[in-house]
Image (cartoon, rainbow, N blue to C red; front, side):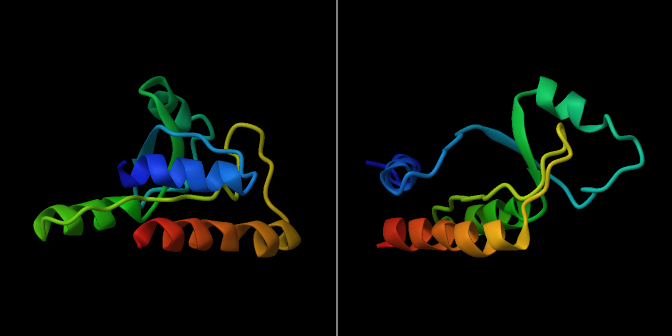
Length: 103
């Protein structure tokens, strides 16, 4: 069983809402055009983040497996953002899941 499947199963066992799919990884996370994300959503991107490209590029260079496990903090569609309490409670779950599947 591959790491993506194990990550999904580990997250669901912890009661975490999980989405699996494409992402847009870019250092241009903030944009004056508030609708810029729609183009990438049309291509199937579920999230926007800034680090996965570097992770996957280095993994390819060194011929090792990599998996990006992300936690949503801000919703570009609704404008909702996580509170500091939500981040403190939920973000460690991402690290727990990553550590569980790394073994």
